[in-house]
Image (cartoon, rainbow, N blue to C red; front, side, top):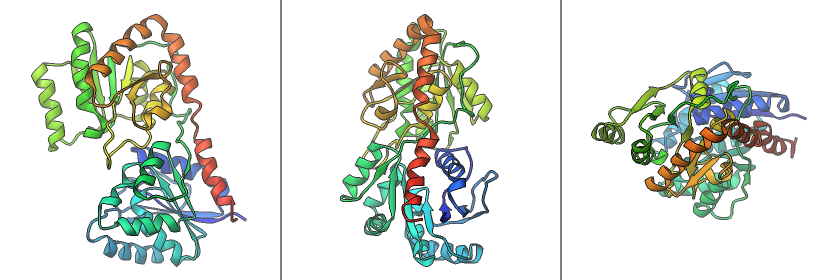
Length: 367
């Protein structure tokens, strides 16, 4: 018998990492559930979903009002989603406590996806013991990387956690008809310290001295009022660097940038309570036929094949990153077609079908 499932997530769209995971997991499990409903944040920009969807949740924050917000969310869920759910599946960690409460209300079981930073940040808040209990009561805990799993176990020892890597969609990302590369490096992601944008710019400052025809392009949103972004812009102005801010791109434009860049660069920086849980963008670049550069000591080690699909460098090390960027230039010049083929073949090893399979098995254990 197939279960009835209640999904809790931030939003249902491909505009960010959490949303992308939600779309691919929920779509991939359509045939494995009898009925499902999707709960998202109240301010979510949701796309069309295969199940009824309710943008009503307000209890993601782990602040002092979380208990009150969860009570409010619980009341609204009871009004919007009457009936029984066998599984309450929290697709992002901040909704795990609410998912635990709803599982009790519906006499169902809780499942939790462990993605990254927010799986461990509760350990340094007043909610530490609550999350510990919620994690222990869950029917299933599934992490998207071994790196995230290790960090969760460091903060919450003794948990049983499975690992299922994320995947990349070949219908949405693909290489160009020809391996026509242009002289620019591409950074895709939010401009924040853990993404390592300043480190990437420091490295590019060295590279552009040898390759003055190159640009550095930044795709993604920036908060002009944010102190980090002001540091980024000040660095660019000081060194008069050829940097282009592309802003938030359409999916089609993003794919074009991936296809034509010399290499994608995302030198993530891992801190105890702030880290990259996977780095899906590296595989998206690969599937578009481009090399990607990430960092050691992170989940990047699980998804980048050194020297084949890209390069791994020490964290917070502009000199090492500059060497990797320099290495990408002649590699592309000599063997662009071969590089494109290797990158695509590597990315194809990571599929959403494999990611969904672990969830499917958990669903079928009791139903």
